[in-house]
Length: 51
Image (cartoon, rainbow, N blue to C red):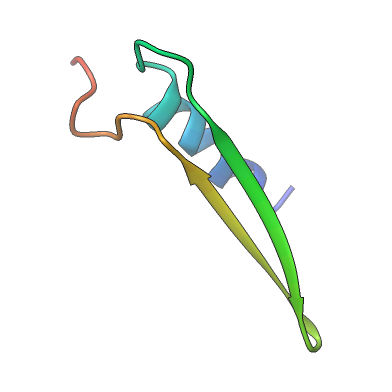
């Protein structure tokens, strides 16, 4: 539930308005006692969205 807003943001602001198929990568790595999560997309971003 902690990651949901970040993943949803990548979809809504990055991938939804893309003309071609987009990619969303969610990766986890463990470093000692910490877990790192990286969310990457190849979407258009907020600035190119139609208003």
